[in-house]
Length: 618
Image (cartoon, rainbow, N blue to C red):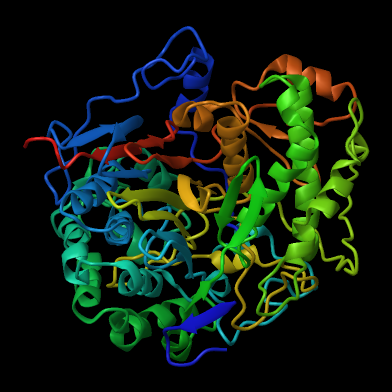
């Protein structure tokens, strides 16, 4: 069931180049036996709660007795885990003052628009999964970008009918979808918030007006994408001498501050109507796109019933299509359950073989059948049925592969009973940016939220005079106009974002999600595997080295995947990338107990978990 709200009227997968490698801390932690305190999986435990404090914004200082900050921390009255220390601190401050998880999430996302514009922001969209403790219900708010009504099925083909190279496609105005983040945040606040929008936007406005020191990842993305950025973006991200900002430089964005002030004052109407909308649409059209102010005025979000799947004694609950993420995560995990993966040691050749084969089976079905359900009849229930997945798992054999990967073969999709295969084109292999964060409040309301502008720095287009970057989300459509994920006007591209709540007996006990384009799915699935099958604590579960593949190997791998496992599985046909792919994803989790919350932030970037204990003396 889908209810449409917002807008005046109404008719995937984050992707792009690889995420920045950061400082390879996941591999270091994994090889050292990473720990919060001592997790018991190695010989060199590492303290997870490290010294850290935010700048003087409406956030927190970690020396304050009511806050605890680190890579993995525990607290009683609230928890935030995000990629950005400033944003985590702001959200924790909202929780300390009695705000709900949604209040904190709204403040956090607006701050990320300022401090992490390379990954998400008001020029993009996303998916928010919310557990309302009073209602004992899960709400799913879909603010995915839509193709403008002027979009055409062949808009990513050149004059000869061939796909425009992906590196060129991502910079086109045609790549920009109608943004949904502002409408999504306002909808969540209307349904589950307790604090006024004006109060929650203040920290982001102050940061944009007064400035903040940029981190190494932000600086690297400015430098790496400098040639892609339009004039407005290069002006915003350069110093007084016109050079790209570097780590530690203060970034001030008065244009963005004014945009946020307009939203603070007038709500979504300030963004989707009037001068901001006119400037946004003109920026897209000047770059070759078709977006109009009518497209923006008509934008809506949907309130969806979540996808649900029983697995290993718990229930996986997340965003349904047009995000393929939670469905594909559930498919992988249920296939691995059929294969009794827990019999095999973690990091053993057999374990990696089964993970690779199960992932290939799930991806073959994902790419064959999935698309925007407003346009495509997707057999979602059939694809997740126990009988079908048992049939698919029975294809996996020890000591051999599902296809001749060395000869370039791919795993074939299945055919659930009564379902006709679609035989769409093979999409471009994609990795990408995005951000994920998790928030839980004192009443155990929970938010798992993944948002994006697609590629790092999106399309490279900043709206002149408005200070925010625009997405290139429509490159998540298949360029060849065939199959369930082809371009159509007002359609949403297929996504791999995987915001998930794990419920036990109907109550959330874990939140998880990640950025990383296609690799989101495997990052999230393997974090859940490590936590629930191999019993690792949250930080260790997300720090354990992961692998990624689709129906067409090679298998990408992080540092820490044993050479012996790669060598052993190669002997019977698995194909691995020649070198490590660096860090895959950036997972943020919260484990939810009755009396204690435990948050963990992926060590591959500068994120932090921040916990709140309101009962401690100030």
